[in-house]
Image (cartoon, rainbow, N blue to C red):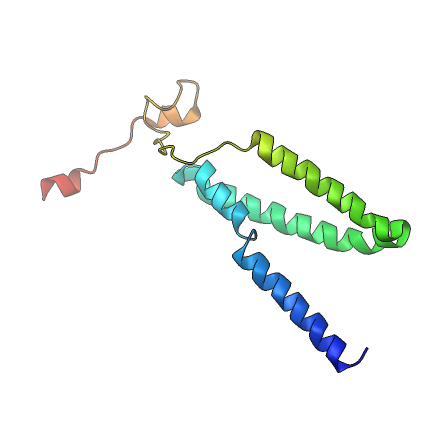
Length: 131
């Protein structure tokens, strides 16, 4: 290939990254932000980021040896994994649309067995009320 093919490859890679960034790329962070209350949200999103990068690294490291061993059939393996993860997400990810986000420290929303119930009810902001 000449310079035209190099430019086409670079443009295609940049387009892939750009469209992924404005498409499904940020979905794990949106989902994590909706599933966890404000207290543990930071730790949960940090763990999600760690798992995301570890998974990306594992795929990048495993792909060349798998491609050498399986040839073009390696895409069937990754397609099957994608289908399995899609099914997992469809069946087990809770729908949060239209649901209010309750304060888990509120005794009415947290069961007595929850460690968050031990923190007591949420504190009222008395400083703003006294103004």
